[in-house]
Image 1 (cartoon, rainbow, N blue to C red):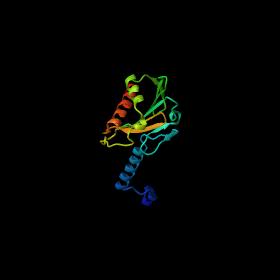
Image 2: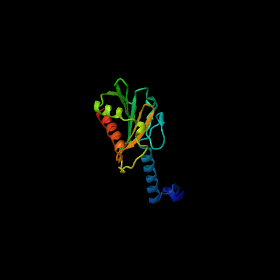
Image 3: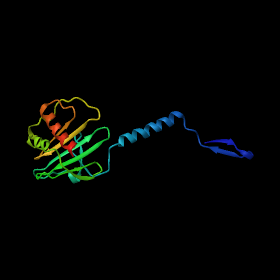
Image 4: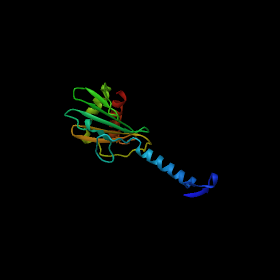
Length: 169
């Protein structure tokens, strides 16, 4: 604090001024914190590791004959979960956990059901796509994570079917 002569001869105390550099650093720190928090939530989530997406706890355990597809990523930090039951009943849960029923493309569902997830290569080469989507598919006790830009034909087929199901919901 510094002291200045005030009106009527009294002393006035003033707070020290922040330097422009300090103000810019504080602003940059606040922006970095805001960007880091983008897309995160305090919801209950189940994580299957660093390369996979989070799934709301209410949608994390598909039953027998149920297929679960989670799409995450993109520039907006999307997280959509589609659960296709054995009887065809399908629901989409978005990242705010809003639930709606949908009717996915039947051909895409059949294509995905025909793939044996146990035979899909665990990883493959892929072209890096900035702000691309990652898809996690769970069915029959198996789980595979694929991302846009997959080069392996089987992984690319899985990606295309999962993306078509979500696009039609």
